[in-house]
Image 1: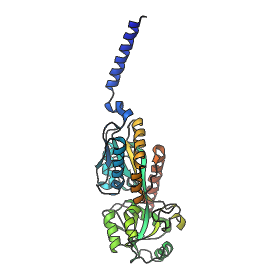
Image 2: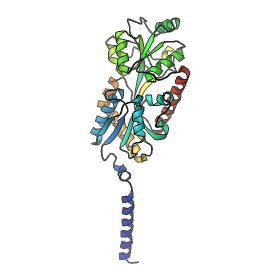
Image 3: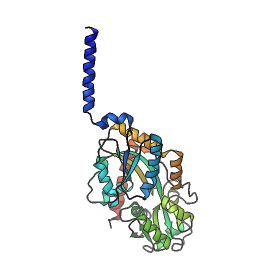
Image 4: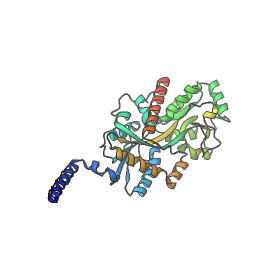
Length: 331
C-alpha cells in the first residue's frame, strides 16, 4: 500500500472522528478545561442568610483562582426545598451546582411531599463548612452558673423554660428536641420565622434559651448579651475555649452542627465533578477563606465524594429518628 493510500485512510479516519466529536453535546467536549465559563451555584435560601456567609467568600476565591465566576443564584422558599427542587432539575452539564445544608437532611422527614429526592437526584461533591450548635441562654432569665446547674434546674422544673427556634423542622428546633430526648427533660418550643427574630427575642428576654449556630451567636456571647453553656461535639471550639463541649458534659452522642455542602445534578460528568471538588476545595483553603471560617466559628470538614455521601446518609437517619421520637411537626 502506497503512502498516498495510507494518508487517504488517515484523513478519512480523522474526518469521521471529527464528525463524532461534533455530534457530542458541547458540555461533553469541554470538561477537560472546566471551568471554561461561569458556573451557576444555586443557594436555596434568601440572600444574607447563613449559607450566603460561606457561599459568597467561596465564590470570591473561586473567581480569583480559576478566572471564572461562581454566580450565586439565591432561590429561597419552603425551608430550602424549593431551591433544591430547582437544582435537581438543572442541566447536568457541570455548570450547575447546588449549595445545600443540614436542613436538606431534615426535610425528607418533615415535608410529606418533595418534588426531588436528595439521594436520587443530586450527587454530593464536598462539605465545605461546619458550624457547631451552641446552647445559649439569656443570663437574666436563666441564672445558672454552668451547664450542670442549668440541667439540674431543667430536670426539677419541667416546662418552666422555653427555647426559641428558626421555625418547626429547622436544625435549631430539632437540636432542642434531640437535647430533650437525650437528657430526658422537657422545655417548651417557641418557633419563630427565622433564626434572626428568635435570637433577638432571646437577647430581649422574651425567650429563655436557644440552640443556635455558633457563628450567629458569637458576637452576642462575647458582648455578654447571652451566655453560652455548651457547644455541641467532641471538642471545644477554638474561638470559645472556656465553653465546655457536650462530650465532656456527659452527652457524647449530642453532635449537632449547621453544615453546608455542594452537590451537582445527577448525570453531571465524572470529570466535571472531580474538577469542581478540586477547585471548591482550593477556594475554601485560601488564607482569606480560612479567616472567614474562623470568624464564623466554622471548620472546613473537606469531606468529598463517597465520604460526604456516607455522612449525608447518617444525617438522614439521625434526623428521621429525632423527628419520629419527638413528634416534631411543621408550623
